[in-house]
Image (cartoon, rainbow over all chains, first blue to last red; front, side):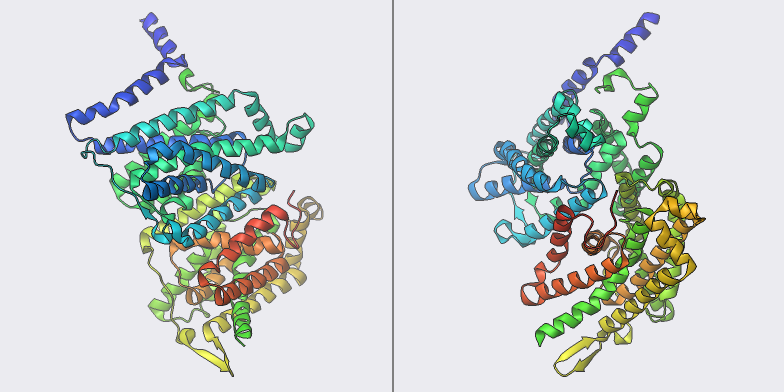
Length: 329
Length: 289
């Protein structure tokens, strides 16, 4: 019995076994489609992949860097529009162009970062909202990409059980690499510099950190996977419109998932996203109103910020209750 | 001639905008809270006067005090519940902004759930009427709301300038520690000025209910518009807010009239973005740190 208990602790505290097991299960999950139509389950899981990718990426600049951006879905929209446009015009599938869409978002993020990251604190939050609004209007008026109606992308021709599977694997791929990027940055010298910038820019500058380059690079890196995920998501929805991609609620969800799980930790955004998505689906299934979803999202945000600002992972870690397999730094 | 016409309409709207942001700038000045929930509080005020108009036919201009009081009560409740702890330390943190953002989502969710996102306007008899001076016409709704707004703003300015409590508010916003040293009850001042700010939001809401159409989710758009007005003039300065509101309102009306209505809101967002990047404290703003 004691041995079993120790084994159990070993399993929970080993940093590799459980994540690898989870990854294997997730890779094999689409097999259940042979036994019936589990499209809802697949949808929820790939939706979680999408938001884990986005909140992990947001965490790079918002969590480690301390720049709370409420307009980060600008990159989501840019990725979707880039790949969507190429798909509609030249017939090249977003699965091929997604990684290029990420690059476009990164280059773009580099430019935006150079301009906006000069201010900090509440001014930065408001300027990020302004950026989102500017893009919303620009894409609303840009007739080449369809204006307010956006673009309709062709469906794939798979049977209904299998039509979601390409998106499933694409988003799984993006999720794994975005978590890896987040983990890598957390444990690199670059990440250390970034975290020092989030505490005090001037002191960081004095210690020899190139503050400007570091924070702009972090901003650009955080845009990459969001842009790539946007490309896949546009194909999944089969239409790309400003009022789907450029709304502040997506950014609010990203921020909340990250803060709920624990910003500045690697596993925080993952846990936060899973909790939020189950919570949202629970509300939808039981009360059936999206307005209530907004209400509960806001309520959760207030409660988290007031009572445990370090988030789930951060609070557990502080009380030394965090199981080892979640403690990635 | 058309220029003069647009100018006058822009100025009338500008005063309404100024009233909408006066509470925001007051709250920021005293507590350093960037209240993103302010626009939704305005919509609460609009709902109060909408229901008063529909149920008992009360004119929206006359329902200003009621809307103001209701929203002030709501604001004080929110303040007691959420902000009291944060306001006490006057730290200028991102978390407070996110808290107000969460509050905005909560109120938006409640209003949308119960009243749905349909466009509403109150339609008092003068809402569709206009007066003519030669070639220039002025819609009465805009004229009345502009006049009422300017009266309320002047009242607020006089209150801040000459009354004892107003002086206490200004002292707190200039230097909290010194104000506390000379015997100002800073906590009480914060509470009351949050209340006054929300009352201003409510009374602006009553005017908004017949100048614009409103629905709960509209406040997302207004957040950035209102921020642009206060940021141009400088957060925390009432004069700055009024000037910012007038300038941007006129410019956006001009763009709408001579260029294309589709781009008129772009004026707000672009100016907000540029001012925050180039000169975050605005024209007359107080130092942020």
